[in-house]
Amino acid sequence: MCGIDTDRKPVFSLARLAPAAIALMACVGSVAASAEELFLLRPQTRVKVTVLEWMPTAGEYREWTALNGEYVVSTAGSISVPLVGEVSADGRTVLEVAGRIAEALRQQTGLVNPPATSVEVVRYPSIYVNGSVDRPGEFEYRPGLTVLQALAMAGGRVRRTDPLGGYSELEQIRYVGKLGRAELEMNRSAVKQARLEAELQEKSTIELPAELQQGSAKQSVEAILREEEAIFSARTDSFARQLRSLEELSALFAEEIKVLEEKMAAQDRQVSIAEAELKDISKLVNSGTVTKSRETSLERILADLQSDRLDLAIASMRAKQRLSETERDIVNLKSQRKTEIVRDLQVVNSELEELRLRREISRQLLQATGASISRRGMELMMDNQTLSFFIVRGGDNGETFQASPATRLEPGDVLEVRLDFPEMAAGTAPSAPAASVNLLSR
Image 1 (cartoon, one colour):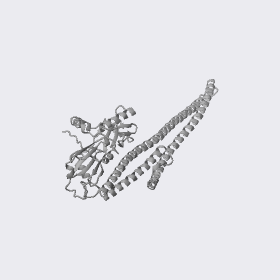
Image 2 (cartoon, rainbow, N blue to C red; image 1 turned 180 degrees about the vertical axis):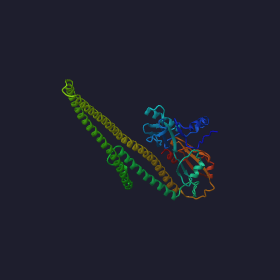
Image 3 (cartoon, helix red, strand yellow; image 1 turned 120 degrees about the vertical axis):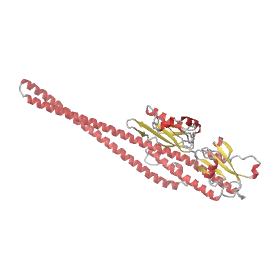
Image 4 (cartoon, helix red, strand yellow; image 1 turned 45 degrees about the horizontal axis):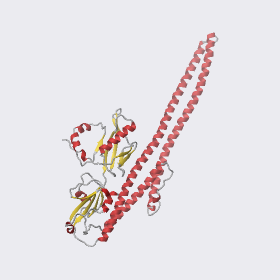
């Protein structure tokens, strides 16, 4: 019996000519029944794109290495794929995105059939756990994650005596460290971004943004810049050597063609002289002045000259062919370098987006920690207190609702864990604080 594991990350391929396709046809009914459960992509989702093309002559698949790799759905809800451009992904399944990429590649390349394309979710948008837990913060989402499991990921209920769900000084120090680490990683990624942009624009030096050249980050940025400058010089020198080698080879072929053309011109003159001499000798043979052997000897010499002329022409054609191949190699070298830089730049930009989000979350958690410590006034044992759960879903314009331990979370959710005190039992359940909503919206 065919079954679909909904906890696994969905993968879809177009035009995959493999034996598994036969077995897949038998599972169409069950796949259709669970299609609504497929995850809808959203910003900050990291996906892996794989493109293969079936080569009938070789009997094997060929990878499109320039396109294969990991991509992050941007805040605008799209991924940028080389050769294809921006592909809308927000609110779509991996099946739909794979189909769009394959069809766009077919139109761009002129293929009869679209290449085999698969899109796999590598990492889902994070969830955030806040409130009366031991380790509040950002956690990786997986399909089927429940409130109780998220509570376990956050270390369980808070291990301190604070009825307001506050934080300790140790946690405050931890958030300071997280914030500093996020700042350092952002500086490193920003310098790498500047280096890649300098390579893309073929500049001789790396130009840093103004915000990295001042303030407390200047000292750490200088050390990072020295490392990136070493990488910049090595990559630039390597590319320049390869390009110079191909250009020198191209110049040699051009010079060879020039010499061969000069030799062909000289050979043409010798052929003309031999033809004229043969014409005169033929007249003398007809008049009986010279023997026939003299005419035959000149004909043999003329044939040898014409044969040498053909050899020179063939050599010239071969040199022109090698020159054309070398010029094509130069174009491919430049194109490959640009493609690699653009792909690396896209990864760095995605990392910067994630780091900015992580920094803002750490900053808000640090602020909440300081406020909680300042209001700590009484100490109660919390082990006997009941926990209540609230989920903030959808950002500022989303919804806040109370959940149970078995409630399933969605990527990007903020889980607020609170202690349920007797004095609150008679009243209505409080709404999640605005700070939790801000965590998601940022």
